[in-house]
Length: 206
Length: 317
Image (cartoon, one colour):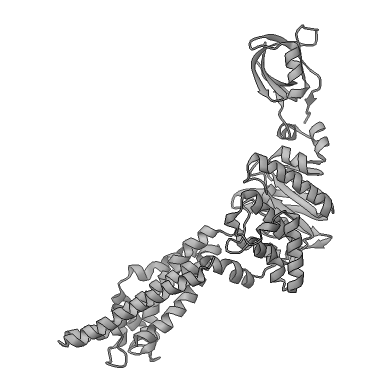
């Protein structure tokens, strides 16, 4: 369950994060400041509150009730995406600011379309920052407890992420089970970090 | 031929261009000269399509390109801070414009090698921009801009970030390059010497308006107004009269049309000597003499001399 959550949340947040960073840095429009602030919201907000907010929205009697979101995978995915949202954005924004717009303008004068400019000029400059953002996002997605805890409903074996399993086992005095799950979680996190450190030098052949 | 007509560009409350019209003839090398904030760079960026004017039109070879995006205008642009693609080699930087146009490999290879030789970077093709000196980076920038055979070449303070010696070398080199390629070129600079050295025509700009457009020599000899007069070279201002320091004659005896002055300071600049004077009425002025003239007059600090302008300008407006 944890792996599925991460597998959905991480790519979604990578794409959204890069687009969001581009929107914040490269475009001038009214409300840019608000977007910038909203991106930070998950960092400031307690995950439990996020979970409750999702419950209010999608749960019984909520505005968007009855789509099988709450107490099921979609709700958990939404919660995970929300809490791990800021990491890619926060890594990519300063790099975009630093590289400035001159290289992109140069590409434009040389006849490159917006897509070509992004693929050939912007992306190579932000890929390290993005990779690092992905590591952080993955770590957060794996370790998320509060928000997922509220929206999942904790149906054992169905909507139980690893962090929830650890707590569940621990509270039912199954110390061995809790430790086993915790070790698995720790190994997963370490594997993610190792994978990313392996990936980085490959991308960085300069 | 570049035609800009009635270009207006505002940034918030600041008016960068206040209805500017300028023609750049095909094959010419035109300089946009002015102090910072005069709008010269903005005008260049409007021509390139990097800025959208609030009013006015831009025509390239008779075609209205005001709403054409930069990509399709066929302009080459060279940036002050190089704007090199940092993660690409010199070769890939120069090839960029051809690669995005999906030209055949053999053509790209031939063209890039040709250009690298032209800008004397043949041996450095595999280097990254960070491994080049400023002068080399700017030559790479120029080769990159020329690769796509632009209709016009636009240079925004191209030598501004380089030291004085490299600047001089590069502008002589740019002039030669222009004489070979005859690409219609516009160079933006705040350095009057650079503008006069490299360009056939100089457009002097100030506060979002054009003050004068003329060949370098005419600009110097017949400046249209005070601003141009004082911007294109050193000048003494005595009341309403403007005198160039090399038009001040120094005599040891009064002759009726002279005025008394005291030598305050002698500044030796190699072949030339700048003599700073204070007149008996308290006005200060400087005179530019050759070494021989100073030695012939045996000028000393504190000496009394008699000055006479050989040529002076008064603007009536």
